[in-house]
Image 1 (cartoon, rainbow, N blue to C red):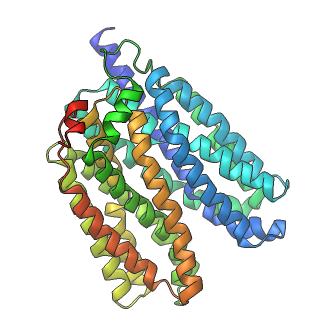
Image 2: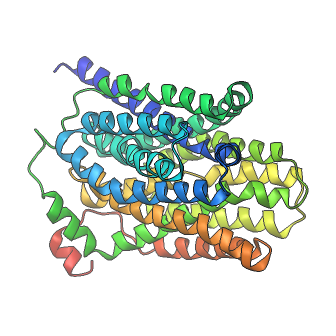
Length: 404
């Protein structure tokens, strides 16, 4: 392959991979808009829809290491194609009047599996194999910046589809839009996973090495805090503002702003991650989150302060993703990056489940979200401390067993 054709192949991988992440995460970001109309149309309480979304998070997290392992072995293209088919099918079935069990299968199982095959751990693995170490962090940041832009774009688009077409037709339109991931996956380039790569540890050996390494556990636990905060805020912020008489349009604006400003946050994280130690940057991100949340909940809450919170939180929203995955590849290499990144992401999704669930439990038991906000702040401080001891250097099996 000539230098020019290799450069074009990498460019295609970056562009197509970033747009796939934008579609996958962006469409998923709109599902909360469908809670009320879907529940009312089917005669359900909100528990059915809420449980389906919680199950989706868990299925996504549990499936991610296995999807990553397949991508490391076979290449990202095949895994993304499979995930995209499941994603399209799941969103389309969400629009059908098939009853609560079928809705759980569609929204929880199929979309959850589809997300495992189409989001950043899979794309990051392909990027890691295609780029030298000094360019990976910026590429990760660029991919997540486009993904954040997808969240910003999809929210008003879904609102327009709901108003113009109704919830069922809007879901079918989103399913059709998600089908664009299929041709994009076909254009990803010749990522063949570990075929043709230099010999290295097997997936099993890499997993055992990671499990024996303290830094890997600290990184995963910190990423679990990220999942807790992101899901708690995305799920409960509209109700929190509504309890204070703030219009629902403000909540939609805040969530959209988080996605928009996070374009800057993830780009900055990618750029800084190529120049400074990523664990230290992660500590600063979690401290920034703690400060943003504390300012929001302990000062008078108005529409203006909510919008300011959206801007501040947007700077830190997904900036953990390129930094966390950058630490994984720096410590354990690119060969099994998608699989190990998937293991870390499982921790994120467990945190996401707890954030969505415990936020509701705290409100139902205490009549306010005060305890949940306090937990979000405290966990952020803990996550900052967890990342400080991590050393961003290659890890061998012997070093992991020795606790280095």
